[in-house]
Length: 157
Image (cartoon, rainbow, N blue to C red):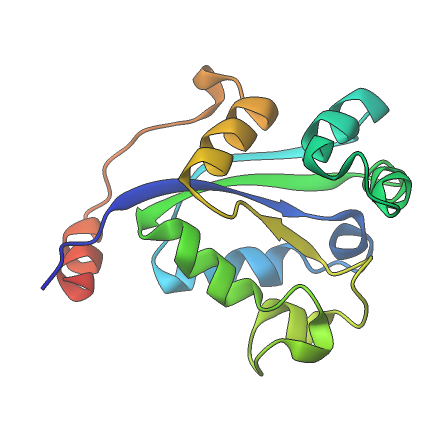
């Protein structure tokens, strides 16, 4: 069996998730799955950060809408850590198009449209590293042991 890789990933609970009072309900899902919270902050995003975050989409017709939405209200930035955290979080979030998201995923349960689909998550190790560096200073990511980690890793193996 292949040993799981411990990863860190970024999750943004977007302004619609904050406005709809879903932050706690979403965070508990990640924690109950066994992911470790290593960074957390409430952010009112400025245009410069929004444009840097969505730079990969700069030439697409929906870029301006993404930027306007992400700066429309506060969001919550999370740094999560765990075995295969990137894939686990993306599976928990569900498909980008909420109507295609599997039942029980965050987007299937809480979102109705693509533009306001509650959460963002890094899509790979390179993206996760870049996004975490964009949203968190190194001192804002906290390394700490948890007694349950040995059980979580053992279950993933």
